[in-house]
Image 1 (cartoon, one colour):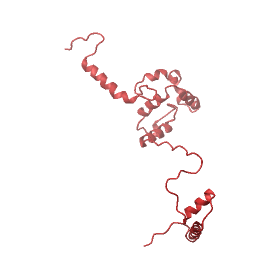
Image 2 (image 1 turned 180 degrees about the vertical axis):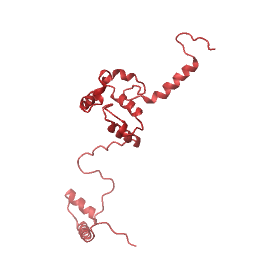
Image 3 (image 1 turned 45 degrees about the vertical axis):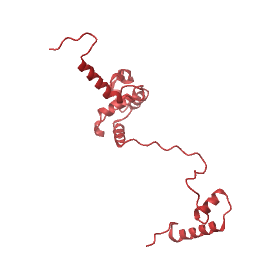
Image 4 (image 1 turned 90 degrees about the vertical axis):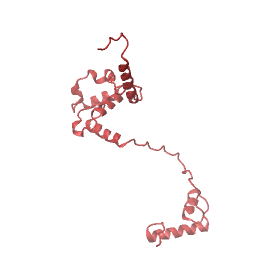
Length: 181
């Protein structure tokens, strides 16, 4: 039989269990610092006092989505519904939840399982692209094109290389050299 516990204290075993639980959930914080596994966020949800039919009627879909998108706990709601519906087929996901329809939540789950999508690279400033290596030497078609692009005078070696490249292109449809052998 266990001895009674003084008020305000917990058995050591329960304290360890509480520590393990909080440690396991420490990674479940969203970017607002809220615990995404706790359901306390539901108390702040705009939908809490709304008619549930609002989320499942085609006529009120726009209203439901507008409420979701203006809700302060949208992020927690979306994380909770993604955990709850994990692995469900598209046809078993109904209504508007977290501002998304069932098929949209299914597509989001598939995207998240594929892995992170890298953000697009920032647009480079207007103007010529930065030189990545030494410019092509004179006497090549690339050098001829560089001279023309920069408005520089074109020398005879570059002009001859360009004429030869153009002739080869008309004959073969490519300026690449074919491997011999």
